[in-house]
Image (cartoon, rainbow, N blue to C red):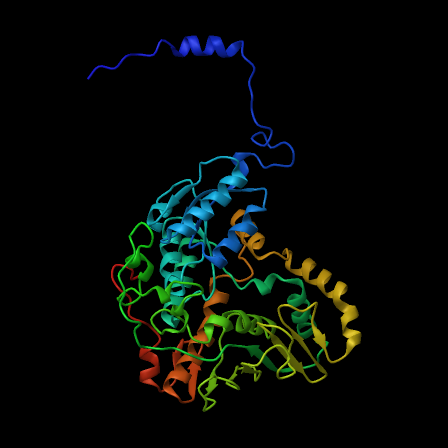
Length: 433
């Protein structure tokens, strides 16, 4: 088929352009504080519900990023995220995808911010790193000890940056509390407490309901690596019932992925896990005790908002030493301490932390800096895996209703074949990584 040629040749276009004013947006040139396109980090977001939307919002405030794509199996979420990104970019160019593999196939994307359901965190992160992307993945970062090993091995082999979303590692009042313990101002650390929610990992099924249109919700992709089960809107509405199911959730790790990560960091155990796990003989995990090779004990507490006098707020931690204690939680102005005089150390200790670590108090920004510098972020793959290993071992102790011993070097339970078999989970094809 012949097509009619345009009368505008390249020669005529250049001749016309020579006499026409050239209009270029100041932001494109990097003026007005904007970062030129050639220096921007190109990002995409996958899984953009409540937490994912928050992460995207934080990243959108950074001048050196450019979002080009969003992805979610739920139509309402991806359309909302696209509108948010388009408003910030000042155009309609942000692409919206249902299948995350289309995002990973884009050669222009440098890094992914992902916050799908827990079952997706490791498989999606591994596939993203294999596609040459750096990854900011929400917590809990793994569903099993074996997944954590795969995550670490992939990041190390491919040289990818990985940050898990334990943002309290980058919040000033938590860092101040950590520094009080690290600096010896509490004396010899002997016990740390971590806030958790009541343990629950159900195995039943919600009744089957008609599936929504695939354009509204792709149920097969929503399930992903999890075992197949019939659709029920209860799994996906609101916060979703999936959180408390073994196939989808991570038991105590749903909350303790934050608090145990915080505790292991303060005791210098970022590259190890607890060695002994003492079953509390209750159904909630209240009072669960884990011991580290250093002798420091970790205890779980379901109580919050001052119910047990440990902290005022959620996601609380408490560190006890031979000379005092400090506690910290969300929704409170700052740490509580046994000796109020310690509060005068805040500016000094935070300045010392900033000088030593050279990090900003912004978890997403710390990740973006790691993408640029290739320096490991504060909550990297190894940190995520080792704290999650402690979480998974607690889950197994609660499920098996007995004490466990763990070798963090060999990464196996001592003399317990059943527990060792549970270090991995079955994964639905084709999502094995």
